[in-house]
Image (cartoon, rainbow, N blue to C red):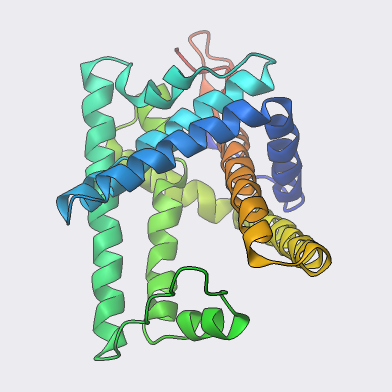
Length: 270
């Protein structure tokens, strides 16, 4: 296995591939993402333990959405069972995926702990009442809270380490700890492409928000906007997750059984 370095412009190609592939199967891809979010909501009802389990399932869900993207890319309909891909590769791979999930939960809670140390005694933001509009001032106050910048900075290496790790662990048999290292190296070596990938998606979300704001000024009424905004946000989040597969596919090459160099997709044993 070796890391493949991509030009910065590849990041925008990943954005376009994610959107194009999503539009081939929009209901299937958004449905899978909704299923995961629904599971997270149910688990979060259980204090502490439920939240920990929900966080630990993120790598498995990421893998499932990657598998669904590959199906959609090849013109096939992604079945709901693909969301359980992480638990269908035998006991060894299932165990490694669970270990990876536990490491991700530990890393995320560590980031939260670091943020809490820098937040000091600042009280938590007041919850927004039902029907109350989320204003730009409220969002700026939430983002500007002490500890938020530290949390984002501390989360960045965690994000990079787990970006490719689920696919490496499950499809290529890399151990959980080694997968974190290889993912971190791949992300760093492709930082230009990933930066443009991030900026590209940020631009897509900003433009979508502006269009929604324009629509709100035309139709008027928060009730109407609530009906429109939720499915749009679901579609956009699903579209973003659809693009993750392409970032992995183009960041690694693997040596096949004949010694020939193969892309990540061709080296998949499943």
